[in-house]
Amino acid sequence: MKLDLTGKRALITAGAGGIGRRTAEMFSEAGAKVFICDIDQNQLEDARDKIPNLNGTITDVSDQLALKDMFEAAIDDLGGLDILVNNAGTAGPTDRVENISLEDWQTCIDINLTSTFLMTQMAVPYLREAGGGAIINLSSAAGKFGFPMRSPYSAAKWGIVGFTRTIAIELGTDRIRCNCIQPGAVEGARIDRVIKAKAEAKKVSENAMRDELASIASLKTFVTSDDIASMILFLCSKAGAHITGQALSVDGGLEGLV
Ligand code: NAD
Image (cartoon, rainbow, N blue to C red; front, side):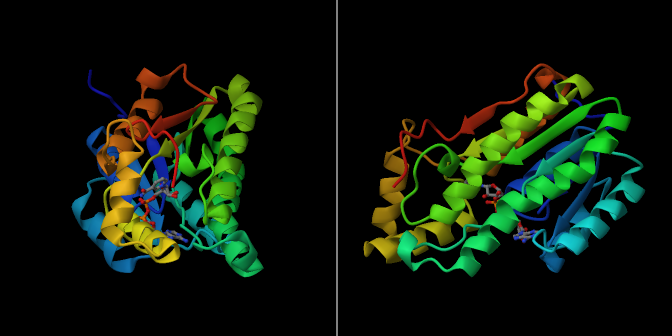
């Protein structure tokens, strides 16, 4: 089955690297016009050079005014909206709850959760105007299990599940579907940083931390950006036409988190 997005207009936050980048590439290959934002100028230019039918701007999703300007630029560029992928996220601090500052808490919530709320609010009238559409939010396995020493991140990612399920109900009659993805550990630079921080906090070696994280997945492996982007593409295509309000795990069968 070929998953087709011909003629669709998609906006992806944090689309220049990692999962967002792979999603932008797959969307473009499937025929969509894509707009991304990111904070990494080099990566953004690289994406613009290499991915057909893609444009984008530098925007930090925690900057509310910049987010509004970016959204308007995306609508101008795309000529409307059919798909929104709220992908931007940050790991936040790695420490016990009593050591976490309000500032670090707030930054983590702003980037992961508040940006998802604000982007969705701006997108809904355009998705409605398009006769329906799809919203994908990036939650995490940390939005399904407790995640020791990552309380702001876990709280934000559980929040995304509640937000997703709620707006799927509110928007169903507009034929706007909303689902979230709960990735496990994705191979790449981000998980390397997460493992390093967790190993330091638990006073174990990075190799031991990596092995422990892989061992709690039933398939005994990490997942890839390809795995996550494929699920996003599936959900946004006709194949996902009757899927809404779901939190879908792509995690090799995680049995918990350490
Ligand atoms: P990543 O750390 O690889 O970053 C992807 C892109 O986000 C980068 O290009 C970066 O420049 C950009 N970015 C970072 N902060 C930004 C900001 N404030 N505004 C705009 N752009 C910003 O991330 P990833 O691993 O691709 O994760 C994508 C999403 O998936 C996140 O919401 C993350 O929480 C979630 N997730 C990731 C994993 C994982 O193991 N990688 C696991 C579970 C959930």
